[in-house]
Image 1 (cartoon, rainbow, N blue to C red):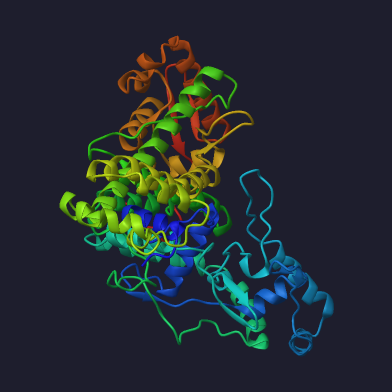
Image 2 (cartoon, one colour):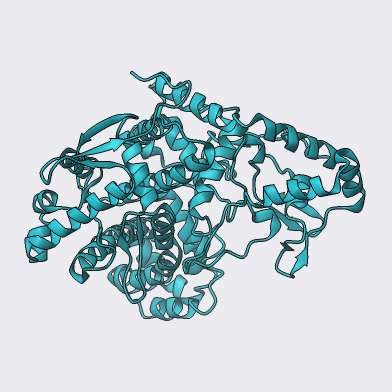
Length: 523
């Protein structure tokens, strides 16, 4: 039985989108967890399980002096360990230089206001310049330290599953992604030697191989991540795999690639959530991008409206699914008529228990009050349904919708200005990841063709042609010049990033300027 409304809401969301996404997870953590999972499978996109790594000694060494938990204690490396480490390296200054080097690799995590997230040492992460710098988030409980999955949650595990299912019948694509990521994460061999020496001295094992964690098991295993059964053949997952494979073609180091991966993965997860929220399979989700960065209030409003419309899809999907669950729990009209008086006499032990809402506190009284006013099946399906829906939807508004906003913000796909609503924007990093995942290295396509491709592929609307095709222009009742200026602003952004070459006002080419990464075979 579900313990409280938050769990109830989360379980509904899990049935729709997967077990589980959470608003506690930041954009870079989706990528970090995915890479942790992949390394834990030894770069196998078809593994039923994976191993995790704590690297506690290494992390205490790197983050010594950082807060430990909510009581503001500071983490300290044990004196005995510290002594052995200094003896091993035999140079106090060198030890501090090494520590400073690793501290500078910390992945910055920010909250919704752009302020640095206040994280304890065991929730801090490093740029994965080598696979040895990947470790799973942990939490200290008393004297024991266990794995933490509330913040470093299942988003990366679910992304792994998407790629696994998306490459199921495409062995060459699967092998390509596995090889490229393995090559990328094992390049910096000198780092592996340094980290290996520190871990050996501090008693860290390279991997905790004694325990494996499930990836593909039956839904009865609550510890396992899972996608809804009806998504497993989703063609979107194959598209994700192809985009990732193309992005990995470019010749950049892991530091630069991590930035691009964060943008791409956040965008893909957002698309998946929207895709699951669609009413009809063939519906097109539209993204109108404000490429003028808020300089024109009219284009800002159109962008904010498309963001709001897509959030409304998520709300409606959640509420439609809740209606199904509510009906299945209360039963048909005959069952309600037989039980309504029983529910009204002892609501806590009957109706609230039936609905999984026994742990409600202040919000239980409106439910009980409405229940006692119900006289028949129609009252239950209208008055009571709406009251319970409002209680459960409150969690959706505060948490589930925030997941998409975090994906948008941290992926560089959307943001808000003070006094405005969320809207779709294109950060430089997102623009780069978009080009690199759609255009081969050292290749070009016409700007107009690129605009049409991203409209057909993603529903992106920027300029005149696509705004007309999508009816956004007609519905906006704006002068066509607003859309022309928005398109010109995108051209300038692309040019500034070295991704566009103009030959004339009428001719411009989108170009992926990078060479092919070493070891990548181009068709």
